[in-house]
Length: 247
Length: 368
Image (tube, rainbow over all chains, first blue to last red):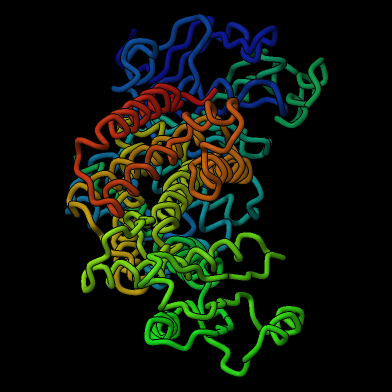
């Protein structure tokens, strides 16, 4: 494996009984890349992302994440990755400061680190007024940005974002992507799934999953050229239409 | 270790910020003790009775005095003849009548035998039984005292003694039961709900992706409930001693250790529940139906196990509360030591290890 490869996946498969959720997917993600992981509902994106995070055990195949083998070194992988799930995952009955402290704490950050991280994060997100308020009082967009910052708290090598901008307004989505670019700029690999095709345009490379398989993988520019489509949306619709699985 | 402490701290935030949880945690033991202590009691207090004294001698006067002094009875004075008894019973003025025959003292001293008639309103047979038992106990008590003063050559001594609970107090019975119930609810239900809630909210995923060791998650979830249960054990014991006058006869250290052991047993049960369900409602239902009801029905606290059909008696053996109830009764009320409860303790320890091992094994490190 090359030093500049963050994720390497070969024929990774996940079956639930007779149902093959993820069918022999193979791809590489370069270090510092923003990798878009697209697919219709039920295409197997979440299952794939969960396997890479160690939440779900693959049925077969090979994978290395952050240089560690998914089957042998799952514990080491955990220290090197950040994860933001579809569901909002901060504690609503804790304040912003307490949430940061908790997540920093379970990743083994020192009190000093937690304090300085809290200060810089609060400053960056302009949450000075809210830092000691309960998270449930925040609007959704802010919560999502906060979740992302919390996932980045321990400076992971790779961050997995599972539909991070679902239900968020366009301005906040734009701000969110600015944060993603900043993270990628510091060398963090970003693995992101989304339903918004304008967001797919922001990615360095995009893979499109249909029925558990990766049907296309390239830069947005190259994909549009190959499928002779004016936009990523068109590319996606052409591919997703072939899907046999329902939602 | 530090990660673990962060986790415990977070659990305390959850607990302290949820008013409903706090009400259940601290309100429940209090209300249970008070309800069982003062309202739901099968004791009979201040029952109105009539006494017909056809002998009017020093012995009957003394017995009547003792009956009047008892807090179980309230003697209705204006009933003076046999004819007045029937209407008094019918109108529900009295529940019990005690009739001394003529020449009571004479019979007692010269024939070594005297009888007292007791007439009870047996529409409620349990109350009637209890009342006549109380009255009999008072009369026998008098007889025993008298025996010390006068030499009776041939007294037939009918010795009825209410062991361990001479005043036949209901509280002696339910304090151990309430303790089992409260610990069951606080530990099993609250722990399982708190774990399942994290699954429902999606925070469990983030925790499982993080490097924290799963067993730390489990223990961190148990710690706050363990501490709160200790507080509850303390408050129940204090309430029973100072409000309900149920003394702790046995060794306090032994009693508290047994309570803490049972707390861990129940925490294990809570973990087990949380590992088989993903929804808070189901966790709550399982706790109520699967744990709370058997605790009430099959622990021997409400219904004596000896009176149950054999299959139920066998089933009752798997109810942890049954063993705990026995231990607490033995240690707290009878005042006996460890050698009388070691078998039951061992059973509880075995159950605890079983629950913990199974639930730790089942705790899903990976979500499927």
